[in-house]
Length: 111
Length: 276
Image 1 (cartoon, rainbow over the protein chains, first blue to last red):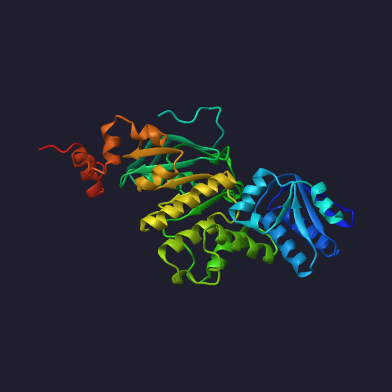
Image 2: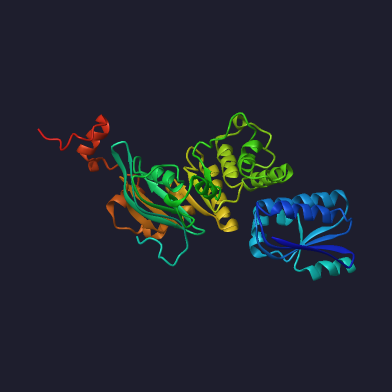
């Protein structure tokens, strides 16, 4: 798994790429929790995530809860159908805010 | 009745599998396969060899001859460590649940993660709670197995079996001993796992209603031999009397092989033909 963290329009965009699985999810968790600490809205760009397993989803859940405690925004963007099905299985599609794209997400920050 | 064509990706492939328990021949050259993302139900009467076949598919038994390929790997060509790594990509829900009575439900479910990963404890706990949500046992992580009903134990066993997101899930009699409503909801869960996670699921059951509801294909075993492999529709329409007897749950008293029966009762395979 690769990742990139960048700031855009006052938000933090974490772009994950590749497989987020048992091997790589500890890195994803660390990156996401560090992003949340910046006290700015965090958008996770999942457009290049080819596969995400339960450990990856658990990292997203922990980051979301940490963001809520810190009263900062946390949302997902460009979630693939396969990843969405994994989220839906545990009804997490009702917990996460999911944007169609990072641009959509950022436009809400700007407006 | 044909097995999966060669072009279809297979997660499990058994060829000419022969196995004995002591001198007794249990599987007599079984060949079958499981496709990627399909639910394969294995059926058969008592002593048909279906549970033995399942244990071979799970690589828990030593075979006499034949080959077993799991996720593309010939298990005979793997080292113990490679085989262990391969097993991590499979999950097993045993008939009785096989939960450890001294551990909470949550600890039982997290056990494979403790054994096989170095994940942060918080990640493990969230994963366990997610799986409990999936099997409709949300909030039950602090209970002991003894505090669960039979249906709940089966669900907890499924949660543990899928904690590592296996490619292949094995289920031994998931509906046995459950009332129809609980059994039906477990069937729904099996279908959701296939659809959401593209999991290949191998289910051994003698519950016809459940089999017909969940199966993409069914393998019927009888006396250690494959009687049928195909879809539910093909099974229903099959002209074989033996298969229709199975579907209609009629006893096959007239099919007893006296020599085999005598050998089975006495444990002596050298008796030969019973003559006066």
